Length: 323
Image 1 (cartoon, helix red, strand yellow):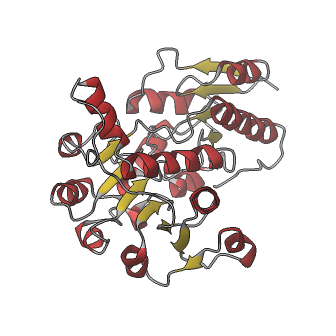
Image 2: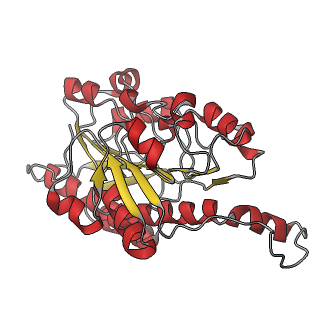
């Protein structure tokens, strides 16, 4: 049997690339820049396995245009809303992801954004770099403490629960959540998390609203102008989930009009393009999609992909199959 041909749409950590190259006929996107649809379709036609990232949008049209050779799409990441899973099933293409390994690092970024927004850290650093800091003052850049506040989680999966644990045990925060299904006692007990029956109830109670729900049509613009108005004027919105969950125009308006106190974003609807309105606001922290960006996590993600590929091409069921 010929060695399976594997294509990486972006460069991965060197140790992972070496591991894959020792087992497969590996081709990498050497320039490490996002591929256009034509290049993605060509990869689907040419390789046995294509390993995309969250920035590679594999629509039904693109998958159909590139079908004929690819047997497995081994996604580098846990979220797969950028891949048309129904089209993959129709075309007989297996899809895998990389759950569990990025839980802690993404939860860390959620906590980072909570601290930065509440304590106005981004605004403060910009003042220092602009030589606009004139020294300590009793009322200058007053922020908000996390300790004792209520954290509201929209979605209570692995990352949401990890964020809850860090917030509850690190800052004594009360935790509420809204999800389609109640958490088990074992999942809720470590943080004393209680379930809000409605999203409106959570938005009205939380001092910090942190998004941990999947992307896709069902959650697109879940947080819109109406939902932002249901939050406390003193509350902060945190998004480490998917950019399309938030209506960015509505968020910019809410921040500008002080409907809510602030926001911290690590993901965007059209990234790397950002809303110009958001860029002009001081009460929003904007990070460049750093959720899983640690050496440990990105390597673990790659090794999870490698394991899925090795199992698939050995005739076994991949451990992380989603389609």
